[in-house]
Length: 305
Image (cartoon, rainbow, N blue to C red; front, side, top):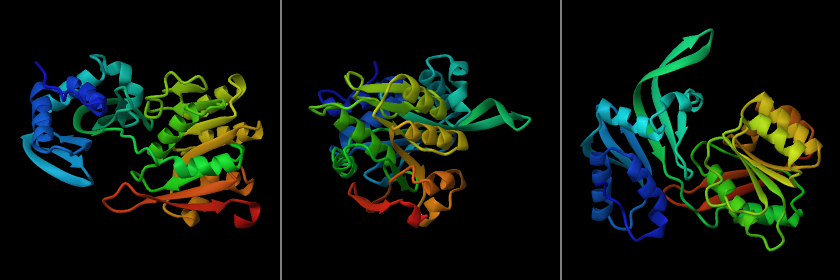
């Protein structure tokens, strides 16, 4: 019988994940949690032939549990519910979504034909990222939007792993619980944003759709006042944002950049910034070893570009 962390509502997602892991990995993680009360696991990293590593409270913890090729294979099969081929489209993008907002990064050996990935074999590494609520993370963005009557688009930028997705998730929670709700769509390509808002009366969720297509579909068919979308990274996605804003929809999106200067230098977004599609850019930083967020709000009028 698999071990579970019991009687703690906040561990529902962890219990779900544990049910998918090989029994010895399950037991090892449960023992770690039991021996370290109050510690929260943020990531579980597995590399074939290397020790199991846990990321907890911003620290990398190397355990004495060695990960084998069999562990990796069992995990991938379990995460794909026994049908790896059904997850191929996301695996070739480097991840598997396993539900409840949990995303697994995956590495292996790619087969490439004509510049396109046609197969992945010899899975070697997994990085399981546990979503967690930081209840105040979306407050500042919500206040900015509320002052603008939810009519001004905002582009959030930061380096990877700072917390952009967490901010969007918390914003979706807050919008879902407004006394006077607004209509909004959530474009959740990696199944990370919608956990917890499934019963919302005002949120339309697009799960696993290509971002550009989902933005366009939502704009054409669901009459949203606002669209939330993570990580704009291609011309097609940027053009879909341009179309949607041109139809009067507010867009809240993210992109990778470490500064406003770097943001303005991004080729795929330059035309959109020139046209002031986004009224504001919101830079996000997080203090080392802390959940405290720091924000820099910049106006993106034509004079700034």
